Length: 238
Image (tube, rainbow, N blue to C red; front, side, top):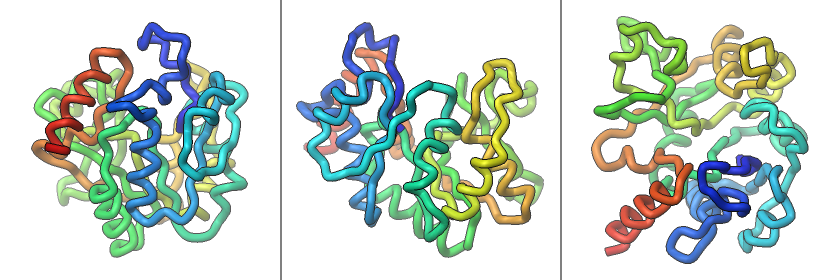
């Protein structure tokens, strides 16, 4: 997903093509996806889509999200690309620290467990602002609750949603058709597909990152966060 404007970057450039160590940050997401074995990659563009396409030198397909109506709407724009065969990774174009190694682990867990969807999560000391992964007494995935909607007990949970997933393609396509924007923001949320997939009886699971690996879910929304991502990347390469 790479359709957002990124207003907090204080720049006219689309957020995902701001450079991290000399390359557009979306490049690192594409590379991680291919390193994990993705046969085809589709970038969902929106704001200044032509500039995004011109900045990406990786071999990818594109679809356009003409109106920014939420993450679920963005993925729905790629429904023809997704199809009904195999599995589909859904990633964020502003998370340049994600690695092929982690995505490979996510794919392997998803397929080993025959899940309908597997969420990439992380255990954070400070989970403020993130959606929480709520598990039942047996430790099984129960639901995702947004921070603003969470109870005090749920906010005490340290496992958070990264916004990155692998779906059974057929289940994803079917659930996208059932999405509603009946909420305060009037948007279509991708997280609603997870509840729909769980409701039809398919298994939902989450792979939690811990320790330094949690840096991989960092989203870049400001220039300061971009500089922090560059520092982390430099230390990796050292």
